[in-house]
Image 1 (cartoon, helix red, strand yellow):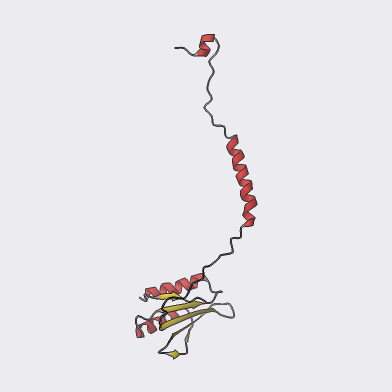
Image 2 (cartoon, rainbow, N blue to C red):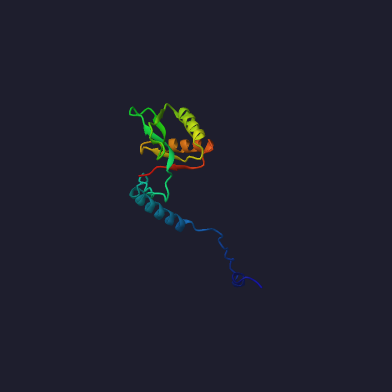
Length: 150
Protein backbone atom coordinates (compact mmCIF):
# COMPACT_ATOMS: atom_id res chain seq x y z
CA UNK A 1 0.00 0.00 0.00
CA UNK A 2 1.11 3.46 -0.66
CA UNK A 3 1.02 6.41 1.62
CA UNK A 4 -2.16 8.55 1.49
CA UNK A 5 -0.26 11.73 0.69
CA UNK A 6 1.52 10.02 -2.16
CA UNK A 7 -1.85 9.02 -3.60
CA UNK A 8 -2.81 12.65 -3.88
CA UNK A 9 0.40 13.37 -5.62
CA UNK A 10 1.75 15.75 -2.97
CA UNK A 11 4.81 15.42 -0.87
CA UNK A 12 4.64 13.12 2.14
CA UNK A 13 4.44 14.74 5.54
CA UNK A 14 7.39 13.90 7.80
CA UNK A 15 6.86 13.22 11.49
CA UNK A 16 8.87 15.23 14.02
CA UNK A 17 10.56 13.03 16.61
CA UNK A 18 11.33 15.78 19.14
CA UNK A 19 10.28 16.34 22.73
CA UNK A 20 8.68 19.64 23.52
CA UNK A 21 10.55 20.81 26.65
CA UNK A 22 8.77 24.12 27.13
CA UNK A 23 6.09 22.69 29.49
CA UNK A 24 8.80 21.00 31.57
CA UNK A 25 10.69 24.28 31.90
CA UNK A 26 7.50 26.00 33.03
CA UNK A 27 6.90 23.36 35.70
CA UNK A 28 10.49 23.60 36.93
CA UNK A 29 10.27 27.39 37.22
CA UNK A 30 7.06 27.13 39.24
CA UNK A 31 8.69 24.57 41.57
CA UNK A 32 11.75 26.80 41.92
CA UNK A 33 9.58 29.75 42.96
CA UNK A 34 7.69 27.59 45.48
CA UNK A 35 10.93 26.37 47.08
CA UNK A 36 12.40 29.90 47.15
CA UNK A 37 9.33 31.20 48.96
CA UNK A 38 9.06 28.31 51.42
CA UNK A 39 12.80 28.07 52.28
CA UNK A 40 12.93 31.10 54.63
CA UNK A 41 9.90 29.79 56.52
CA UNK A 42 11.79 26.77 57.89
CA UNK A 43 14.28 27.23 60.72
CA UNK A 44 16.91 24.45 60.53
CA UNK A 45 18.70 25.49 63.75
CA UNK A 46 15.81 24.48 66.02
CA UNK A 47 16.00 20.83 67.06
CA UNK A 48 13.34 19.33 69.26
CA UNK A 49 15.22 16.85 71.39
CA UNK A 50 13.27 14.11 73.10
CA UNK A 51 13.08 14.02 76.85
CA UNK A 52 14.15 10.83 78.53
CA UNK A 53 12.20 9.33 81.38
CA UNK A 54 13.79 7.73 84.37
CA UNK A 55 14.98 4.18 83.95
CA UNK A 56 13.07 1.47 85.76
CA UNK A 57 15.91 0.53 88.10
CA UNK A 58 18.75 3.04 88.31
CA UNK A 59 22.05 1.54 89.46
CA UNK A 60 22.81 1.85 93.16
CA UNK A 61 26.49 2.54 92.52
CA UNK A 62 28.02 4.08 89.41
CA UNK A 63 31.05 5.95 88.14
CA UNK A 64 30.03 9.50 87.25
CA UNK A 65 31.94 11.50 84.66
CA UNK A 66 31.00 15.20 84.59
CA UNK A 67 32.00 17.35 81.63
CA UNK A 68 31.87 21.14 82.00
CA UNK A 69 33.30 24.03 80.02
CA UNK A 70 36.26 25.84 81.48
CA UNK A 71 35.10 29.35 82.55
CA UNK A 72 37.79 30.85 80.33
CA UNK A 73 36.32 28.91 77.39
CA UNK A 74 39.63 27.28 76.49
CA UNK A 75 38.74 23.67 77.16
CA UNK A 76 36.72 21.10 79.05
CA UNK A 77 36.92 20.42 82.77
CA UNK A 78 36.29 16.76 83.55
CA UNK A 79 35.53 15.41 86.99
CA UNK A 80 35.23 11.73 87.76
CA UNK A 81 34.14 9.92 90.87
CA UNK A 82 32.10 7.06 92.25
CA UNK A 83 28.61 7.84 93.48
CA UNK A 84 26.20 5.53 95.20
CA UNK A 85 24.91 4.22 98.48
CA UNK A 86 28.10 2.43 99.54
CA UNK A 87 30.50 5.27 98.81
CA UNK A 88 28.50 8.16 100.17
CA UNK A 89 29.53 11.61 99.00
CA UNK A 90 33.08 10.97 97.80
CA UNK A 91 35.09 13.92 96.54
CA UNK A 92 35.39 13.62 92.76
CA UNK A 93 38.77 13.96 91.09
CA UNK A 94 39.43 16.53 88.38
CA UNK A 95 41.10 15.44 85.15
CA UNK A 96 43.42 17.79 83.27
CA UNK A 97 42.70 16.46 79.79
CA UNK A 98 41.11 13.53 77.99
CA UNK A 99 44.11 11.21 78.49
CA UNK A 100 44.08 11.89 82.25
CA UNK A 101 40.31 11.30 82.33
CA UNK A 102 40.66 7.97 80.51
CA UNK A 103 43.48 6.91 82.84
CA UNK A 104 41.41 7.66 85.94
CA UNK A 105 38.36 5.99 84.41
CA UNK A 106 40.42 2.88 83.66
CA UNK A 107 41.76 2.79 87.24
CA UNK A 108 38.25 3.15 88.71
CA UNK A 109 36.87 0.49 86.39
CA UNK A 110 39.61 -1.97 87.33
CA UNK A 111 39.05 -1.30 91.03
CA UNK A 112 35.26 -1.66 90.61
CA UNK A 113 34.56 -4.08 87.75
CA UNK A 114 31.06 -4.20 86.24
CA UNK A 115 30.24 -0.75 87.61
CA UNK A 116 28.20 1.28 85.10
CA UNK A 117 29.43 4.68 83.92
CA UNK A 118 27.12 7.71 83.87
CA UNK A 119 28.19 10.70 81.78
CA UNK A 120 26.74 14.09 82.74
CA UNK A 121 27.65 16.82 80.25
CA UNK A 122 26.88 20.51 80.38
CA UNK A 123 24.62 21.77 77.58
CA UNK A 124 27.41 24.00 76.23
CA UNK A 125 29.76 21.05 75.67
CA UNK A 126 30.34 20.04 72.06
CA UNK A 127 28.60 16.84 71.08
CA UNK A 128 31.93 15.41 69.92
CA UNK A 129 33.36 15.58 73.46
CA UNK A 130 30.53 13.43 74.82
CA UNK A 131 30.78 10.92 71.96
CA UNK A 132 34.55 10.65 72.37
CA UNK A 133 34.13 10.00 76.11
CA UNK A 134 31.55 7.27 75.43
CA UNK A 135 33.82 5.74 72.78
CA UNK A 136 36.84 5.71 75.09
CA UNK A 137 34.78 4.11 77.87
CA UNK A 138 33.64 1.38 75.46
CA UNK A 139 37.25 0.81 74.37
CA UNK A 140 38.18 0.21 78.02
CA UNK A 141 35.69 -2.66 78.09
CA UNK A 142 32.93 -0.91 80.03
CA UNK A 143 29.70 -2.39 78.76
CA UNK A 144 27.19 -0.13 80.55
CA UNK A 145 27.62 3.53 79.64
CA UNK A 146 24.69 5.90 80.09
CA UNK A 147 23.90 9.58 79.77
CA UNK A 148 22.54 11.69 82.57
CA UNK A 149 19.36 13.62 81.81
CA UNK A 150 17.28 16.11 83.73
